Length: 380
Ligand code: T4K
Image (cartoon, rainbow, N blue to C red):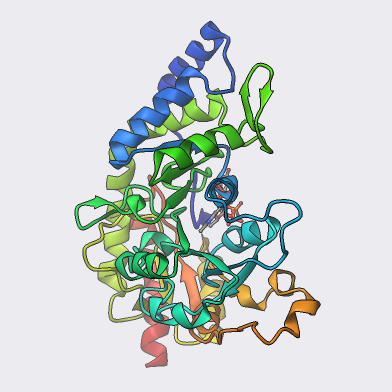
């Protein structure tokens, strides 16, 4: 079976060298030497400052909310609101709810699939604390418009950049926008550390606060300064991250071949995500948008019969999940605004991500391309 993704496995000898250094140094976690080395190397590779490694991309979001002071602290009013996109992986919104905030979904742009800045302003209320947009499938959000909205309304902006590893926008790292940007280094991502993630802060003082929060709020042997949690990256995760980073260029080249082969064969046959002008490609995902859900189901089944496991990233559209909704008491509140979601629901019902990973050969995807093109020709 050719799955939607496959984790990148670096050269075993390279990994062994890093593991040998862990055994020699007898240091396993709590800000070890490999975690420090990976921090430095990622800052250089990504062209960013104030990067903090954490144990996964979901905790990266949660820690960012806390460090920036928007997450609920015990005893605070329940219904702080955060504007976010319904077209994303569940963790973007569930991390908000988990931290006691109310995700308020506003619609996406049906072409870029990112949060539509034109719809954000009317959803802002006195309870709004922040905006959490997602660079979905590595496509840059309209960062200028969103950053400006954040500034005008005194709202924090945290970009969920889980898919945006290495993406540049107008020559600089896309991840340097907002008050913070987060990354996921899950095994299925183009850059990974088995499980892992990072936060890139605009300000050094936010980084320092977050560094404390990921280590239980501890600042010294007998000093626990504030409420914290454990969100540290361990040395084995960092070792994998270093090896994967050592080989990142080959990984990207291999993905690029398949990405461009799909694009060339499918453009004009199915709708593709419109990429933001000025943003680079990182070849993380290849989504296609079919004409209807029934066509999607038919294509998916045919692909599966031929050995391709495409995935419905991201379905369902998150506004449909009742457990992310408002508590009943708040629903009676006149100030509550429930924006209409049209595009995200529609796109979520018709979008399919095709297999894409390093090592996948162009010759291996031709069968999938044929199935999709044939179905399109039949429908036309
Ligand atoms: N924000 C956004 C926008 C995100 O997309 C994500 C995660 C997050 C936040 C949270 O970050 P983390 O806390 O996860 O770091 C996967 C990943 O688990 C998840 O990290 C990712 N987004 C999401 C888009 O995809 P699933 O449920 O699709 O994973 P799974 O287990 O079905 O794997 C997909 C395919 O990969 C399988 O068909 C086979 C292959 N696979 C997977 C694993 C784990 C392998 O071949 N080997 C493996 O070890 O969620």
